[in-house]
Amino acid sequence: MDKTFGQTIVLGLVASNSKNIHLFFFKGGEKIGLETYYKVLRFTILPWLKATYPEDNYVCAQDGVPSHKSGKYQKFCTDNMVDFWPKDMWPSSSPDLNPLDLAV
Image (cartoon, rainbow, N blue to C red; front, side):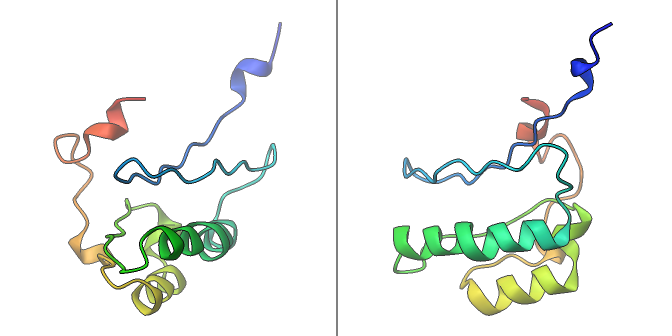
C-alpha cells in the first residue's frame, strides 16, 4: 500500500490587489510553529509588504492558530505594522465569517 496519501501540503496566503508575493516553500516534515512562522513573517512577508505598499496601506489579520496568537507574534506585528488587527479583533471560527477556510 502506498503511504504517500498521508503527506500534507501547507499553504499560506498573502492576498492583495493583484500584486504577487513569491511562493515560500517549507521543507518536508518541517513543523510550522511560532519560530518558523515568525522568521517567514519577519524576513519574507513584512519586507514584501513594505516594498509593495510603501505608504503602509495594508491590513494584517490572521486566524486563531496558536503561533498567530502568541505574545511574540502580536508584539512584532503591533510594533512593525501600521494597521495590524490584534487577536481580539479577529473573527471567530465561524464558517460564515471565514469562507475561504472551506474553499480548499
